[in-house]
View 1 (tube, rainbow, N blue to C red):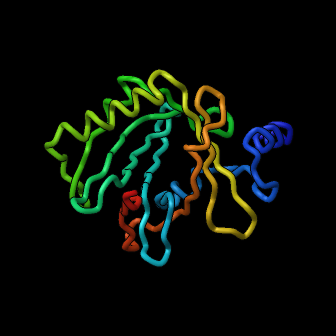
View 2 (cartoon, rainbow, N blue to C red):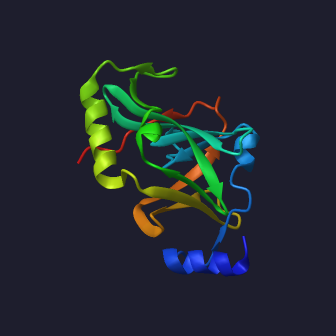
Length: 183
């Protein structure tokens, strides 16, 4: 990424200047790591876990689990292909995007949940917020600081609700999903 593009992103997102764009955001995934969003390193939990793979067609294959509830254990699973556009990973929420979506329960391998209510509620929230809109994510890091920062855009506009911190974890290290506390 050019210096001008990096400065434009940092200005647009109003990010601390200590954060720099990550040059190769998929390097840890190629080394077998899993992305863990909103980590609790003491409890070894993540709200979202994401696995990445690079397809022969240049698309990035994503499998993401988002914890929705801990008791009972319910998660949203999404399997989708996205594209790399410069420093960003982008996709458009549409029927093909939602075709890779399901609600799952229990622990790995996460059996499909036979409760359409959750799927309908989740799909309705996606339609309301993002249907037909292009979403992109950008990765930033500070020197010598483990948590990275993901910043999102919707149709090219900063989307603060898509901003989160994440770390890369070993898949066999005992990490698990944990939902946000209910308010």
